Length: 330
Image (cartoon, rainbow, N blue to C red; front, side, top):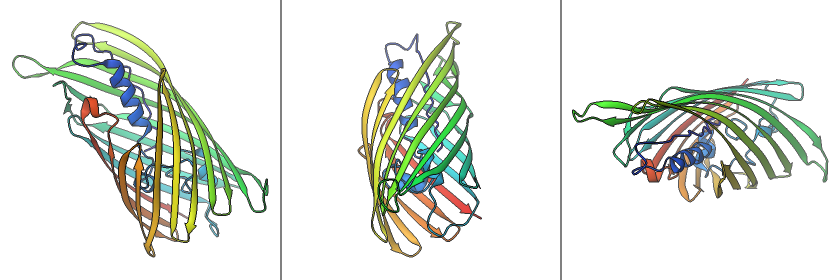
């Protein structure tokens, strides 16, 4: 899912005794940062900094990396996913990506949409993501080769993103009717820069993402309105290695800084060919298990993955992610 890293500054005035608003907003930001972009990456532990598939990596430099013999100038991808929380909403997301090659330059445009049903939180209150949208434009190209060694390659990429999101919180009155408590609307802007270095069958990748967000809160109960501003940073550093023809491993370190709350996380996974064209994935994403399957063809493929997410465990319980990716080129 393409960068729905939206930080919701939710401040519960009358819920202060039962919910820590700062913790919820921070944990939600971490969870959104850790939603994988593609099912192959999701299956192999969400280690995407040095991944070869540009549709699945949040490293913008990856879209310029071409497999040997690829002469296609156009590519596209359709991504679908759902996150089901034990005590919270079920979030469904959809993303559509298109890439065009212009000489040595690659341009990708990605649109993402996500929303949820209404789910009951651990504290008894209810929450719902209203329709949220994100637009991302990425440019990348190979900037050098034979830089340090024979046949090595260096890629650079950058992108800009903007999004709109809305989240509502509800309570039940004495007649058990659902009433709106808080309405939160956010506008976000951000960008990412990244490098991907390839030497033989080893890749090294690094990227940095920053998001600025403005949130408007409306307290329906006490008839108050507030505006909050926040920013977040995500830094990823990783490596991958094609050990054998059908065995690919990857590992990442991630540093998050969400309005002063800092997290250090690790991701690792493996892709293993079973029989052409079927591949299996397994990994650990921030100490949560992942698995998946992929089927590849000369001009495209399909991936399906499952992963657990515990970033929102305090508020929504453990989340179960199921995601699928279909990609093609021509």
